[in-house]
Length: 503
Image (cartoon, rainbow, N blue to C red; front, side, top):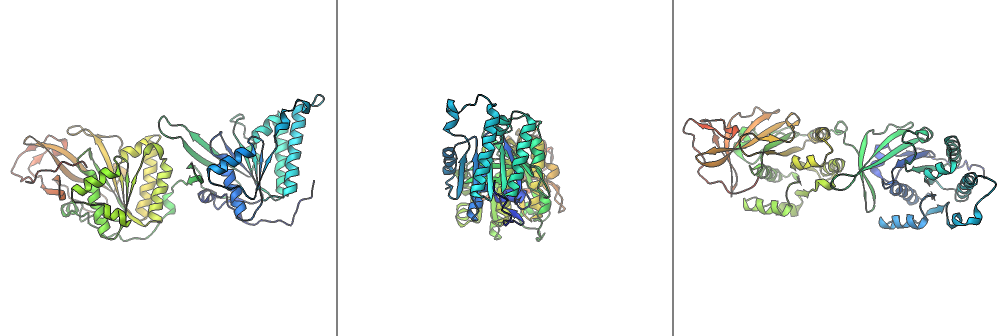
């Protein structure tokens, strides 16, 4: 065995090859340490390991992938699927066709003893020959089988850890978690532990997430972080922490583009707040949000519209028929419309999209249409509330005006929501259907505003070819919000017939 080459010294941290993972780790990995990357088969261990080695290769560092479980051909196929070329990375197979030769079997010594000794010797010879800076050992499951008992296994892993440290290697040890789930021997040995998880959904693609279980001497970002395996590698979406993101902005009220709605809101909408448009299907929520978005574009602001419920083409055609042509603004880049399939999107990825729109693209007005579909992307209501609380806090601290659309069940009478987000909302605008003289009309009311002294009245609301129309307060009606009001006066109704439109 060669003496440790002490002339090699690394200071500071090294990148994993995934910027967002480095952020979660507080700046990357401490050099010359051994780390455990564990997860069930298919969770993404090999992809992350290859990105780790490719990052080193791009910096001129030698990389070594030691495999007991996959062949070099299989690893190159994985790399090819991501359009990677493994130049500068040595692939070393510890198991080959010789293991199938009956003449290679031992009769005096236990086969496991011979195989484990040969495996360790093969690792040492390869590392001493190549002197790599980064090493991936795939996988510890085979080592565990060769060792046959926990004491021998632990001793061998400790010996390997010490050996790698004297060779100044930064090592990723992969493990498929096939041992007893309660066995934490590897956790105690490794300098750091990253756990990968994947869960199959009843509908849609599987969800993947990771967690840093342990990282000695480093302040890392705890909790679960969503990630996805895409062409080009693993994309990690760090958990959003609103307290880390602050900026100064003007709190001057801005117009919605509808004078009567501004009056009802107490002068307009305040930057750094969110508004919940709450009402049954078809009542006008989307049209109102589009009108407000166009007004924001007119002020020179960039707008992001996240569309869960309908297609972009349908939305563009319907808005144009009501005198609100969005296509020129989409072409100019002032308006970004994202059609989202909640079955294929994780909450962490959506939060990452929002951050990118705000911080990279300069979006100052944002619409989520609707929360009902977003709810379906979540594993449970409590997670939706936590996610939305953090996201809305982040958007508020960035000075973004946010509009949230929430559809309710029912048309008139008992109208219910799937979930109550009222306490998270700075402003709540209610939309309702009501009956009058044999017709179904619409009403609008501002139920809450944390930043302004809003109007408490209920007004008639209509969608026309010129856009949104709001009438005078329905002062002579009682029970409008129930859908079956009593009329006790001579309140003039808007003369124009409502255009058939879906909101």
